Length: 340
Image (cartoon, rainbow, N blue to C red; front, side):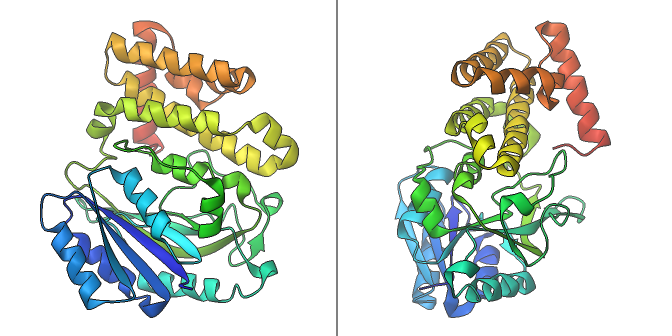
């Protein structure tokens, strides 16, 4: 069995995908690289086939009709043979030294009591316009290199949460979860990371800057203008996340994990609210109200707590004046405390 399967969803990625794949090839024969050509119109599919030809047994090209990023992850998971599963976007890459540490850690999981359900690593924002970097680490939450339960973890920071870039799930956990990501929807990776969490009993944190996350590519889904335009995607994903687990029940079984999942839920609902309200339209305003009404219908206690007694309360002031005030709060947080 391969130690890890890397899935690389690609759509019109011919200009930059090789940097990503080449960084993964440093793992040698112990890694599997699934290159998902998502109905690309450029030479992405051709490049994927070349990698499969040149690196048999390591690289595999999978061609599909365009289904979006989530469907690329679905296909990768369906074909994965590795013990662990990691998504790497085609414009990102991984650090070789950190990759070696990840592989060494997985290799040492040779007994059930040593097996992690989730590996967490640092990731690094690579800002293309300025050439600067920013590292997101979790050493304040997890001990380095030690397999722990959620009860042994510490609190996450206010803007700190697990992401597609930091999380490496054991493949079996993802299969047990059974989550099929929606097609043609952006930001579904938040659902991919959030939904399996209650199945994780043991977590291993490696204080290594593993994932390099490019910021600044034109048309990138995390650009503010793009996120505002795709507000309906934010809404859909946030509602799916809210409905996925009963945190009141989970708190009785695993209080530390429930606390973290509530923290992430607050962030997701806050982000969905603010980027929808940034449209400055009555239609978008109505959708924010519908999101909260939906949350209220699923879990009234959690919905009320998030809307009125959390970070989300600062971006959900009612009316047009409230909308402007909410946007001011977001701009202030974005500039002063680097909330993004």
